[in-house]
Each structure stands twice: as structure tokens, then as C-alpha cells.
Image (tube, rainbow, N blue to C red; front, side, top):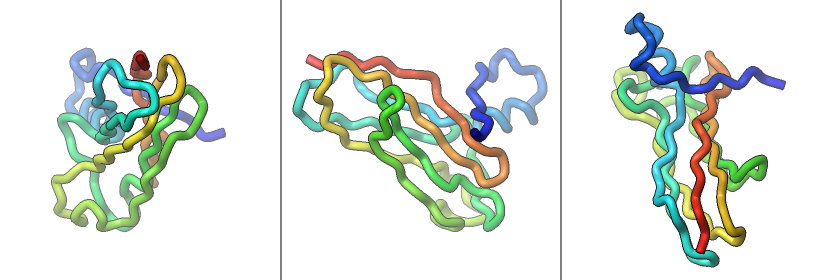
Length: 129
């Protein structure tokens, strides 16, 4: 099983290089805190908050996945250069439109860097009405 890295609050990290490394690999989930059962619900996953990730041919974000608990809801795959190439300042960002059918969601996102492995977001709880 691959090692899964988790985000650490970069305000608690002293070295700028470490802040950069943690932030630019970590996926962040943005969505409403409640959804309606059976209706489309948008969940945005962005890799990196303050820092952008490289988009080189040997070092790039290969995919972003969204889970509800342990159930895979969707995944977006990228090839090198998709986010603008070596000089890009863009970040991988995906909007997943899901239709909730349960009473609650426990959303977790993962991103995969070809050089630094799997990174996982903090879980986000969503109530479904």
C-alpha cells in the first residue's frame, strides 16, 4: 500500500521550503455543508492553496480523486503539460458533480504526485436533506 501524506497546518511549520512542499501537494475540498438528496451537488477539489505544483514531464499531479468514506465517487487524470507546462502557475482543480443518496457524506480527496506520492485532504462532512 502506498504511503499517504496528509496536510499539516502550514502556519505551524517554520521552514518556507517545507510549507511549499506540504501545501502544493495537498488537495483541498470546497463545497456547501449541506446537500439535497437526489439533486446534483458540486464539490471542488483544488491541489495547493498558497503554492502551485510543477507541471514537468517527470513531476506533475497525475490525478485527483474524490471519495465518500472508502467509496470512490470520481477521479480526474492528467498528463504532463495539461496545467500549462514547466512555467505554469496553475493548479489542478476539478469540479465533481455528484448526486447524494445517503443521509450524510464524509468527503475525502486524494491527489497523486508522480514524484511525491499520494496526498489526502482532511475529511469534510456534508449533511444530506
